[in-house]
Image 1: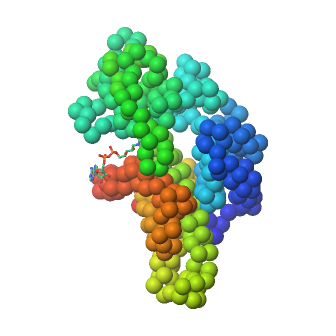
Image 2: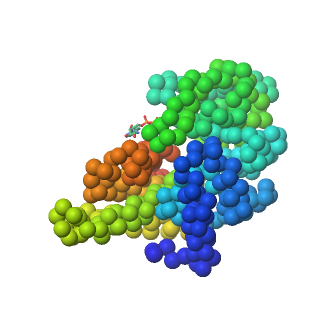
Image 3: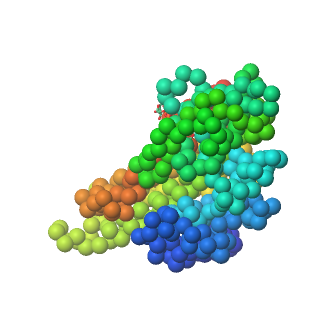
Length: 370
Ligand SMILES: Cc1cc2nc3c(=O)[nH]c(=O)nc-3n(C[C@H](O)[C@H](O)[C@H](O)COP(=O)(O)OP(=O)(O)OC[C@H]3O[C@@H](n4cnc5c(N)ncnc54)[C@H](O)[C@@H]3O)c2cc1C
């Protein structure tokens, strides 16, 4: 293993493998709603649920490396209901003062109110979502096109341009007058989203997270954390796919005689998959350690996200090709993973846009190690 884990992290990895086998796998045929209560209870008992939550709220605020280990192992088990294992984290609400700490952060962490993140705007938006300050009130107008979980959210943390003052994150309650869900939709990976419209919505100024002008860096910190989480899931998924493919190639091929993996052309493809998985895994664990050391990992996070999401796409695609037509049966695990991993090259920033950010970091800002 390239990541050279400590005894403590190896024990954590073993605990997660056991958890996936005992608590998640038996619930594969249940819907997310059916499985959720039992998975949450089991994850709490196993000490996993609390890992994304701050210590002051009863969480264990795990390190980036520990979270990476858990996400990697869950994906390497191809476990169902992985999304229910971790408790809701504070996200962009981390460190907010009153009143948001009591009205939104505490209920979010307790699981009694649900939040979502409104960043992406529709391609035909002429002006970004904006607000003017009217005394103690912000008047917000605009649209957000791709809010994951927006249909069931109590509030949306929304990036808003505050007139003459710059972007800020603003907490908008979804039941406020002037908030409309224009449509809800499901993406290829099966996740649910909503498109929102805000028509002169009155929001208390106290719902602004931080100061105007701080919206973008705060949003980027949250997006950066999620990018590493996505990379960890991709790395674990690659492990599962390659292990599954290995068993397939070790088996006898009744039609041609000999093992399926005896063909040299197949071995070349197979070796490429192992090389890609090794590279993605090495990048991810190195970056997790840098993050825990307090280093700025913006560029490394981008690199991990772009490389891991593109690599897992190639790994799943090639595995389907090597296994053959049976892997395209709608409920075959590889067909399911094919649909799931495709969305990751766009979620939290499309690959090419991230490449441009990385290049800009060097050419215009001369920042970062990459
Ligand atoms: C599963 C999933 C969940 C999501 N959840 C959320 C969420 O909770 N909240 C949220 O706000 N958003 C969410 N999104 C939206 C996601 O962040 C955007 O889809 C992504 O950032 C790309 O933006 P876009 O769709 O507007 O595409 P565009 O920005 O229009 O980009 C489309 C393509 O155009 C090209 N392109 C664009 N700009 C450039 C450029 N400057 N130079 C070169 N090429 C360029 C690239 O090829 C790019 O892939 C989610 C998306 C998915 C798939």
